[in-house]
Amino acid sequence: KCQDLEKFVAPILDNKGAPIVAIVYTKNISAHIVRSIEIPFREIINYTIKCKINEELETVKQDIVSLRINTGEEYLKEIHERKISTKIVDNLKADLEEQMKNLTKHVDLMKSGLQETIDEHIRDKKNHLTEIKQDIITLRKDMEEKITNEIIKRMENFTKIVNTKLDEKVKNFNNNVEVVQSELRKPYCL
Image (cartoon, rainbow, N blue to C red; front, side, top):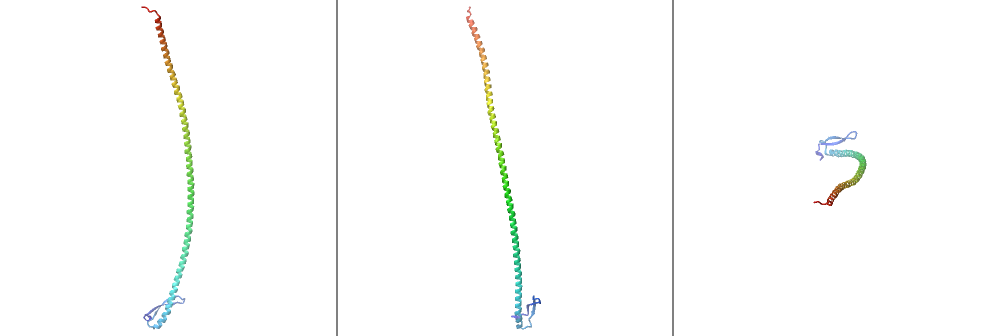
C-alpha cells in the first residue's frame, strides 16, 4: 500500500521538458493525496522510461543502420578487393599459362633441334661407316690381289727353281747317260 511509503521517487520536468528526479517525503501526507500524486508520477515515470527506451531504441536503430552502412561499405570494399585480387590472379594465371606455352614451345624446338642434330650425326656416322666399309672392301680386294700376285710370283720362282734344278738334273742325267753309253760303246778289254 502507498501508506507504507515514506519517500517516493518521482520524476519532475525542468523548464526544457527534461525529466529530473524528485524525492517526495510522504510521511505527513494522507494516503489519498499520496495516491493522487503517485498515479501521475507513475505515468510520468512510465512516459519518461518509454521516452528513454525510445531514445535508446532510436540510438540502437541508428547504430544498426550505421553498422549496416559500414558493413555494407566494408562488404562492397571487400568484394571490390576480391574482384581486384581475382583479376590479378587471373592475369597472373594467364601470364603463367602463356609462359608455360612459350616454355613448352621452346623445349619442343630444342628437342626437335637436338633430334635433328642427333639424326644428322647418325647420318654422318652411317655415311662415314659406309665409307669405312667401302675402304675395307677396297683394301681386301687390294690385299687379295697382292697376295694372289705374291703367291703367283712365288709359285713362278719356285717353278723356276724347280725347273732349273730339274734341267740341271736332266742335263746331269743326260751326261751320265752319255758317259755310260760311251763306255758301253767302248770295247771292253780285259
